[in-house]
Image (tube, rainbow, N blue to C red; front, side, top):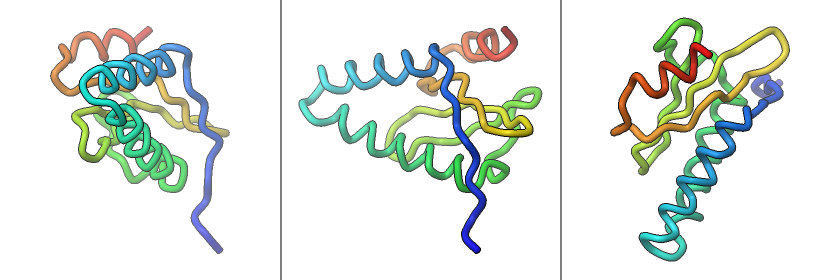
Length: 103
């Protein structure tokens, strides 16, 4: 039996975070945005396969690191799925992501 996969749901704000990061990286170097998306996809797959593997960092929210890029995925687990709340750059003010997670 393979690992249990959960449904994953992205809040609109998290989708916007991804779009913004992609656009920024593409402006820096053509193709870098696609590389960011590939690394993010690997992180998302990790969350889907092993949602409890990533540490709880704030309340019930967990954090998964994006390899090669200074980004983290904040998500929570409920009975039926994992919900992605934010994709944040590590240099951003922690109060910004904490504020979003408490809303």
